[in-house]
Image: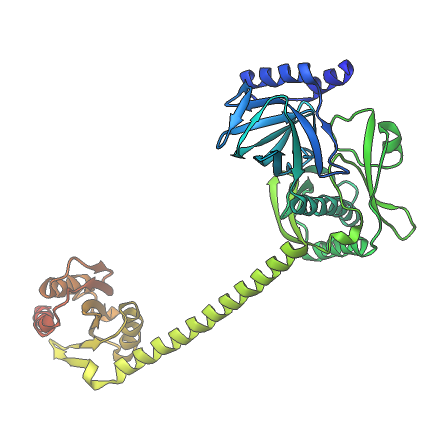
Length: 444
């Protein structure tokens, strides 16, 4: 026992809080490891050996108190090896403590949660009950992680090594050594390999053996991980030559048969560091819900795309109607000082389309000055164009500033051949602005 405690102290890196670490070391020295019986049973009885609240050891807790309960044995898996901690309840008569998470420190399982009803004291014997549905989903994802790891190595090469993982109840995440993104073709191959093993419906074998023997048999051990002399080996699936498909050292919880996984699909890949890729995968109902949500999203995008096209088509028709409707067009054109002018007021015409129309008209008239007044939602927009042959005589910027000032707008600017400005909202002043421009042309 002393040797085990020494190894546990050496393996634990600490929480980073000296005070907290001291507390856990003291508890561990006094009580030792928590006996974990959760591989075989999700219900057990245990003796409360410690209650921690606000980083202090206390004797009892009451309703609404948030605390950590430590028992001598538990069915709750403590977060480790990438697998999240169990949730559930701790009960004693009519008293109820909701376990929101379980963590593992120095081989002790810490039940984090809140008293929902009644109270709890040290040295009471309690019933520990794991959320079975959540545990089953975690088991599925943990076994799926092993199959995914083996499939990655089979398709991408045995140089693929695990660099981290997250095994949750609703997804798995796996980090591994890889210098470039996985191609869509290889992703499909990886999924096919894993799903082929799933469909074998083979029993997942778990055995305890000496570490050295396990490695000699081909079990994958994580680099940098510290293992006991006796290790737990999880094996699943068969290759075509009857050899074991996946064999890893693992202390996590797993399913009984591969068919419980019900398909694996990689839904995302990304880079987390230089030479390290991350894949996220789903299975079962999570995968079905994801596919359904994706289909709905595609449907919505297609509908929005269709609606956008219809709106654009309608807007285009409105623009054409505005240009062709005599009641919405007021045209003033003529010559002054041998310079042709073209002034046009268009009602209900989008201001952003005025420059395009201006360019078209400049080509048509070949030489002259064009001013377009676009009236849209009561606001007036002004664009001015001067053909290249007249730039030595008159400047579009000077014209637009003059027009904008008369219409109650502000500023305006652009280039000698093109300028634009806002013109307030009083279209009754447009004729006055046109007359002012004619006077400018006369003075050229």
